[in-house]
Image 1: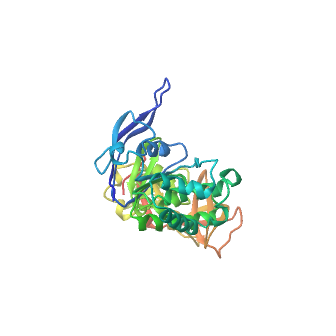
Image 2: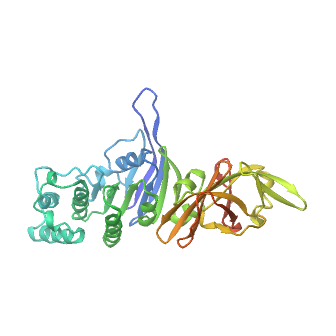
Image 3: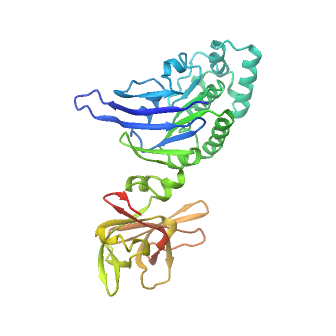
Length: 362
């Protein structure tokens, strides 16, 4: 069991602008934890992994494995396996020999090598390609072989960088399950990077959301989805992204209302906001698609125009707009609406969040 401490690592671009590529990242990864790094493409995830794996030297900071530097913990990488998007298989060796290569270097008995290879061959369903060389394989099968080569080592630490990005959606679901079960059974410490929020939330026991090489939030999938630290996380985590509405508060009779900017409409201030709303005269409310409802016309419902209906599994997403303000509303699959039709949208009070200066308030 291996703890990994990532302590204030920073990496700068070597160019004249000396841009910050990895910005003072610290992580305490517990033994046996499955930690996922998620964020848009080209936002620092791979660089963080390469620093953890010892392939890139940071400009400052340190990474420790059970309190030791990598060279002391695993001088020949015997306790670590890495799977990167570029599979880096040995082109002159068959799939079988690619899997056996590291085990032979570790001086394992032939019977042990054969048993491990047979186990992983069956686990990933690659028996039909074992005698082929990488050049004969499509990219998706090369990714499976790269996974197999990592698994067969039975390492204490596994580092993954977009390891299933080339698989089709059905195969991704199957392989995600295999990765999760294998790593749990192995009790390995896992650091896994992906640009897919759903993949990160499916696999990770904790999630690190990155943007431009900087941590935006660390937490469980529930925390990132329901209490996003800021607007960037709220928009990135979950599908569709959280709806945001700008507003100004104003007094009306004996209560305050939220006057929605660009929608020419007002709703009553949620009870949870009443004591603090005065401190944020201009801010945004955020609300997920499942907390918006299409209802018959009534006060406090916002008239919107139907723009598009998207079908997603057992639900569908209705995109509606009013005066340059677009919202996504989750509706039952059985419901359908005509383009250009006027519908009335109600915001469920318990699903409304307050954001100020881009940061989550309540």
